[in-house]
Length: 218
Image (cartoon, rainbow, N blue to C red; front, side):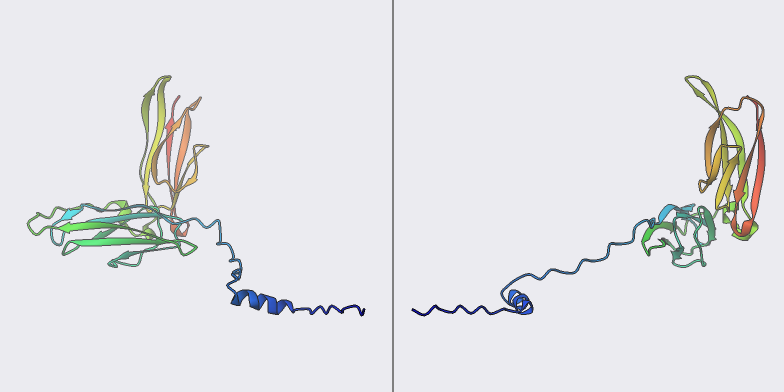
């Protein structure tokens, strides 16, 4: 009896892959590159109008503040604006208008916030003083206040250094109270053991600064 021969045919791998796709096999999709990390999202710190109700032609302050933003715009456009921790614009709306602030981050992320100025024809127009926040940045930073306050606590009185600045990008209080920060107003506790003079410095655009000293006795 003659032995039977068994023939083995090699099927190309490519054909098997094609057969899998035609027979309902699911082909895996290529992996996508992960999204870039570490890019902070922009934040709107403030966006408001003062006053929010006005007479036709009355001057209103539209104030905004953003953080971690590469660009910013206000619509309807009043004038070209740029990122700032605290800035106010003087406007005179003729009719009730909704303003929208858009902040754009370094990664292209956007965040918006809106505020409305209601214009009432029967309302009497009142003059609104323009604070330092409404001045152009070219005028340099302005220190509005740098004073001490006393807060009572369970262990006695606590001395606070309170400050407020406008037209600034950052502030610092030395020695050793506040490193450079974008918080343009606030109060911080101090406990000097001897008379100490503290220096508040406001940093504006183009290297402009404003400085004020305050001495605290223990």
